[in-house]
Image 1 (cartoon, rainbow, N blue to C red):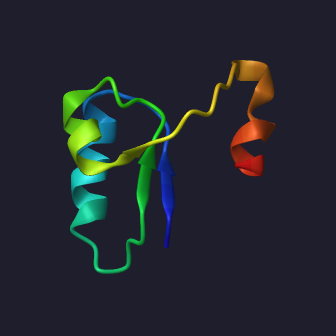
Image 2 (cartoon, rainbow, N blue to C red):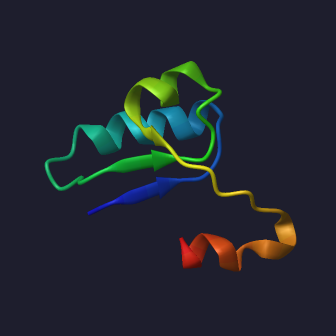
Length: 60
């Protein structure tokens, strides 16, 4: 399973750590590679999204 993790705080980092420990994870992507912990665990993606454009995440 591939996962796009949206957000760049401590909660998202904790989720990322749990996800990478799962044998079911394919690729973990993050929208916030500025967080050093997330940058180490996930592949950065450029999905420019504002609050009114959440549909773009679904398209990704």
